[in-house]
Length: 101
Image (cartoon, rainbow, N blue to C red; front, side):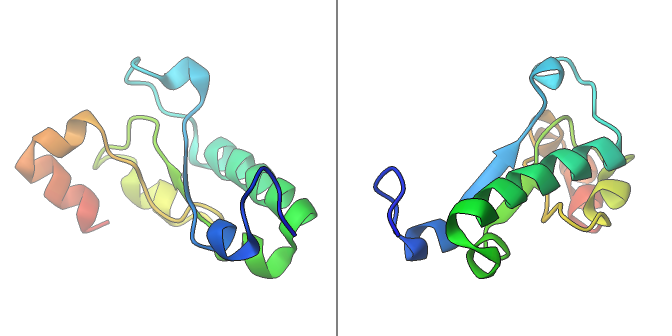
């Protein structure tokens, strides 16, 4: 199946970063449960078009102000596959703590 020109294999190898619009540039983070729910909905939409096997392969990252203080809780959620780290990546010690989460 092709959707917007993407084959199953292309979608299977896709990485998506999600951040709530209200969080962009604010330093605010969605709760881990809210972020997980939003990412779960994205995965469900992919599944409707490409099926569960493909949607389960898509990597979906949370990108709204990931910090060492919230990374562990975010990354433990069922549908969050990792984080897209912004400003915190510029501080070696902070970024190291995130990576170790």
